[in-house]
Image (cartoon, rainbow, N blue to C red; front, side):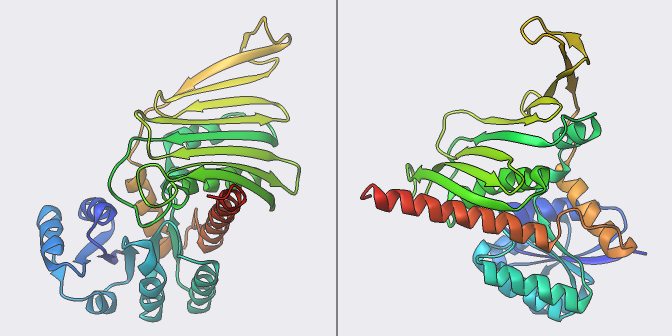
Length: 319
């Protein structure tokens, strides 16, 4: 079986998706559509595929579509694709509002179609290494840091929906509990929207998390720390290193009697390629959708709650 796949959007992520789809296993890549014909032709030329005149005609020909358009168009395109009988992969965030996300989840379920959301970090080798280790038990406190230099793209959304939502999704997947409280601060620095934000989360099972995101820094930093009921894990995604501190395991630590440390590393893989392959498997084989519409909706809800908390803090400060 092969999947007839189309891509809607030829921007930054649409281009990357097209280059991957053009050489993907079990995929007949039909091509892409974009409102800008010149951009569509440029990316189609790179990927060696057809540039379609309209999204509608591509949807009618495809079994599945990848939506890599700006966030404001996610709901409309995804709803149209589902109505045309397509399986849908939509880049994060799933939609611009909770109501839109709920509508897409319900429509996909009613149509019996796959709905996958592009939280690509779930497919990273670093998270796979952590999940493949003995682990640190139930997460009690988590800390994520994601900072990056300024790039003049994705400025239609805040840093929360641009970058922080990746770590919100990871934290939610680790906590496995209802998010019950959110506090946050943030500010605009180089754009007209929030460029730096810090959020504190609390879950129903008692777990807590702190997340920092910035797109106005001089260097990149990506870290995740998990303090659990059975130990501590520290991931440095840029150094590709995982340190595990657990009782009675690994090399002994003088500063923490009875505990030892183990250091693991990994080789980066193509996260986007793995994410697309997972979508293809879900469509063709009925494999479990790793990041389904419910997970996408949960990440969106958390991000919007962070945005709302930032807005409230700025209002309280008279900004």
